[in-house]
Length: 117
Figure 1 (cartoon, rainbow, N blue to C red):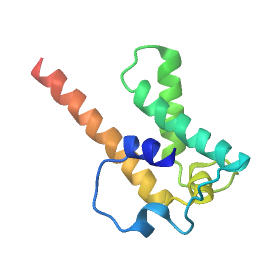
Figure 2 (tube, rainbow, N blue to C red; figure 1 turned 90 degrees about the vertical axis):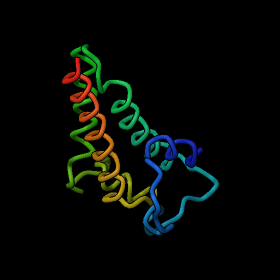
Figure 3 (cartoon, rainbow, N blue to C red; figure 1 turned 45 degrees about the horizontal axis):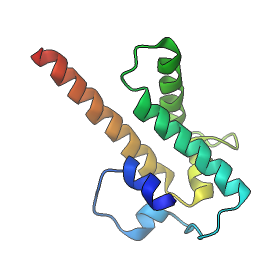
């Protein structure tokens, strides 16, 4: 479950296991709290993927909310990006940098395509 999901969102990089897993490793059994946290993270990543180029104002709002959630470095509420990643055992800094780098690459691709048109 985890491998498929995170393989889709992270570009292949050379890294050490502790850089990916953080301080804790995910167990094979997923309890309710982990399912909730994973669903929150997965929803944000899917919003970034699905609505990146949408023209719909509703979809753009979902995209922007997900992007703002990932960008926010704070840890002042339970379901913030940092706390969700920590709870799941992922390094929040690495995850944030990976997701934002992916968004920047996609933005650059769109810009280049528009420039060529």
